Image 1 (cartoon, one colour):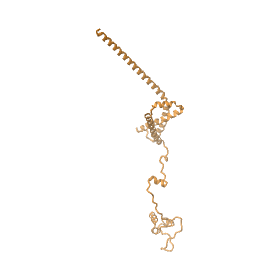
Image 2 (spheres, rainbow, N blue to C red; image 1 turned 60 degrees about the vertical axis):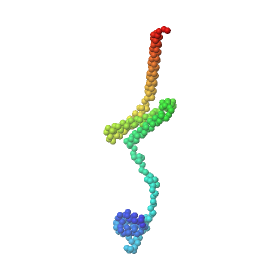
Image 3 (cartoon, rainbow, N blue to C red; image 1 turned 135 degrees about the horizontal axis):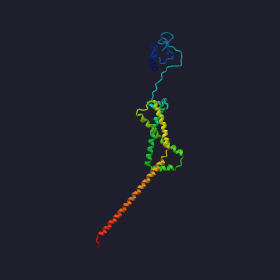
Image 4 (cartoon, rainbow, N blue to C red; image 1 turned 90 degrees about the horizontal axis):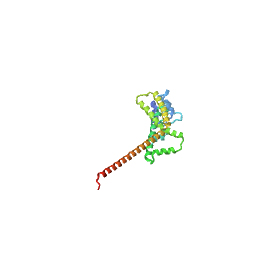
Amino acid sequence: MYAARCVTRSLPRCTPHLQQMLHQKPLVRAHNFRYLSGKNAGKPPPVAGGAGAVVVAPPTGIILKIIKARIMPELGYDDRNMRLGRILSPALTIYKKQLTSVLSILLRMSGFAMTLGVWALGLTGLCSKRHLSEWAEELKKCEMSRNLVSGAKFAMIFPFAYHVVAGTRHLIWQLDMFLTKPAIYATGYAAVVLTFLLAAGMTVLKTGEEIKKDVVDLTEAEKKNKADEKKLQAKAKQKAAKEEQKAQAKKAKEEPPK
């Protein structure tokens, strides 16, 4: 009965005769619904035996039945969707990869990578008993191929190079320049090319040997300064000793003989 009433409410063009029939009989065959629209709209279905006879419909495969409502347990949003088999819509996988979005993501990833590197070096120097220069010497003693060393240097330099170039690109945007779509894509491709050139150039540079020479020169200068200071101190001591000797000689002359 309740199912028939729900069907009655959901059919706005239902005839009064069919509404009365649905309220009286909970089981109604779908054959009678063809009188709800089309040419037969508003006409009562055919009956056998006069106006007071029972509606007779040919047997069909669709029957309205009364079914008890299933009470769903109170579940959360995710649990309910998992129980019903509803898959969450994807987020990043449904969008086409674009130059602007990829460069923006790489900018944040490069900053995160540099942050991890700085923290790793700082914590290593703080917690380790050995100095970082000693670790560098240990790495030099390891027999590694030149290509492997160059690849490691390039991987370490690339985040820094890209962050510098992309950050400069963003600063240029703050000046209200290159804000059109063609200009944004042009500066994006230029940033990629400049990043690889800068990273490759910094990888090829032999800065280690130059720094080593500078360090050696600094140590030699310090040694010379220390030697000069020692010489000055020795001369000062000699002068002080001579002055003491002269003072003692004067005292000896001034004192009368006993």
